[in-house]
Image (cartoon, rainbow, N blue to C red; front, side, top):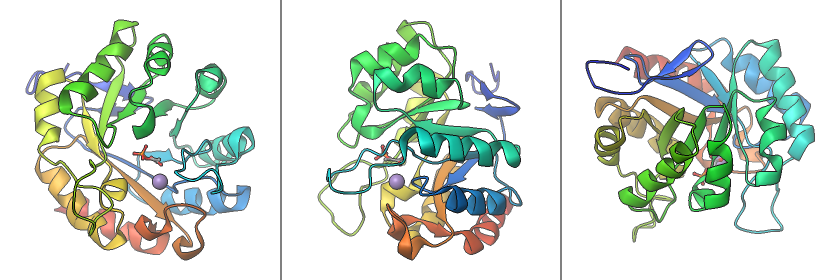
Length: 256
Ligand code: PEP
Ligand code: MN
């Protein structure tokens, strides 16, 4: 427990969510090939990045879009993460995949679309594995914190919450970043809360200012999509920061 803020610390290896230093998580939206993930992880390993994130089971709006490489992608991700000594978080969408994925990853992500999936929340609550619980884009703060309570009720209290924007009426951004949700939920739950500016804005040009706002309001970390070739990414290229631009950006953010 961090006494100053009465907040729970969630550890993933040597990383402490909820302590004084914000945790930086970065990686592509999806693992696309062994070469792609290796290139990106190699680049990120040189920067101020604490942890990797990439999806292998992708929850896409259209069933005809790239769905992720599944277990093949998980193997590529694990190999790259081990090569560069970085822990990683990845999303699981089905109860049936939980144990197998948990064996290999350092943290399980429950995505926005599954925040209301109570059987999945209960199942991840039975694991001894840190969980990153993203806010559903339609969730009230009560619904989001209750989703965390589902996980905790099964015994797993290693939970980090992630604000990723909520659906609103304005189309200039993909979602609307609910920045005040960060201190509200930190106070309500005592859990660390991080911000995902990528899905919150959907725009590469807004990642840095949104990240700065998140850090200023006291977020316990950032989760940012980064790609070596965003124009040809198989998902979320428009909101992905170019690998070559990410180092200077993170230096500006951490120094500020
Ligand atoms: C993701 O993190 O890649 C993702 C699909 O985000 P969300 O669940 O917030 O939509
Ligand atoms: Mn994405």
